[in-house]
Image (cartoon, rainbow, N blue to C red):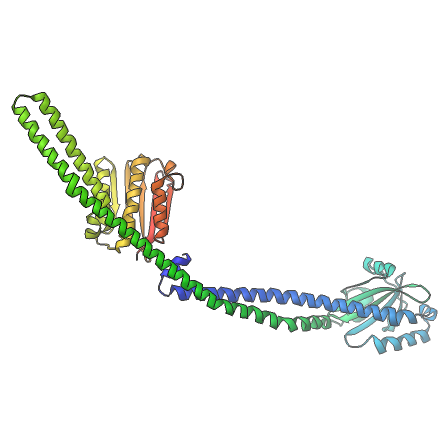
Length: 436
């Protein structure tokens, strides 16, 4: 159901506004979740970047300048001196381990003395940092042998830095930091901005509610004006059809009927006078005139069906099918004879049926046609099915003016129109409008 149909329903405006507000808040919630996730990741990245900067300051400013030849040889006094520096300035808070490697994979210093002098394989990233004096960070693999003393920790961020001793010895300085502290730092960052962002989104949504209400009002008024214009147009067309039908009935039809009687009487007199040839010609003219009168009366029914509003849609459709039956076509009407609809709905359904049946006669080459009217859920549907050759050239939008008119009529009445080939052969013409 479209917006226009929704507005037509009782309480439709309130439902449409509620749907707008609900969808808006859902969109705000989704945007808020995405924004919070982006800020959380950005906060974590910022915290890791800060950890790298701190590691560079500690490695290049505190540890590397105090690396002595004795420390490289494992001298206890030099190890003790480095312990004082490390424990005073580095291993505190979230930092749980410090390691200093040489290029052979030997740990020349660690605050965990049991690791000093041990050799382990260095990864490609660590070797690259050692050679190029760069800094990098990653989650530490606590299952590795060199990390056996940190396995009681849940999750560690390993930051490693390539540096040089005063004697220009290449060294790799590693700091192990609790990842929870990094996450907390990132969380503090996004929790500062998230309330302001979400609040701004909510305020924006709230500010749109009066605008949406105003737009709904304008749409409702515009639809009411359009329906009023359509009703006036239909009324004007109906009045004009009524006037034309009345003028034809009271004028040309009556005159032609009189002419047919006069010609019949003249033919009879001529026949009695022995002028048989002339009498035959006059009698033929009388028959032609009576046929014209019948055709005009059929046209009058098309222009202004007297049974439509007096007896209902079913009777008017029966009148439409009568000429097809007289042509030898099998007809079937499935419509409740006591069903009464508003005049506007009856009128547009009758006009659609006229064009649909006209299409069957002109294009379908059908032997039978079925017309069905169903009313359900506040809507009424007219279906015309034939066993002809299919829609073919009669498709709407391909130069067929009558079907384009039906399409426009359905759109203006807030309904739907479809013309399709049936799988079993023939065409299905479906026209549906609100039964209001």
